[in-house]
Length: 201
Image (cartoon, rainbow, N blue to C red; front, side, top):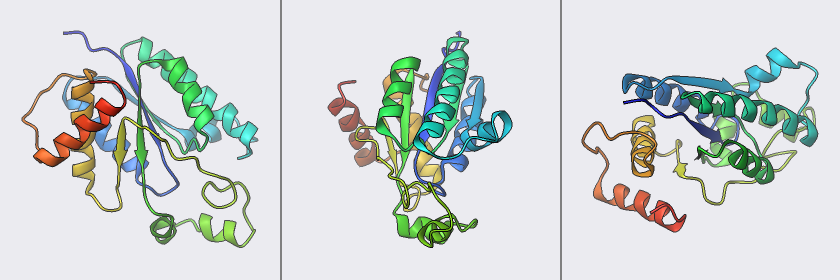
């Protein structure tokens, strides 16, 4: 059966586990026969326009480029996995409308824990005024109100997060169900309720 493309949009503050989960998800989807492509927002910024900063306008420019690439990949039967902070709700909504076959995943971690994970010292430098435009400190991060998948990588294992993500994809009809569900009845019920509240079920 021909696989249909879609876009998975990871959003969340720095060090919230987006890249690790994206890599695991890509591997799992490939094992099920899907073609995937990870688009790392930071890498794309460095490769295509090193002059871009982190002002609102620059963020919009970079994310719109990523959204266009996701749209092209999706239309060609590939699962595009975007990994980006994308702190503004307006921008994420714009991406959803543009791409259409779009699933938003919010990696939600408390700021205090993220500061402990911060191997680059971004948060510390932002609090000291040495670094501008750091989401969550010097610029706002607008959390998604109704992401299709709401993950808590700081209190659940990557395996748990991956299982929740794949089960949501199955319920939405984006991927075929392949293996018995490994989630608890409570977890399964919570996913169904979330999708029901969003009007999917």
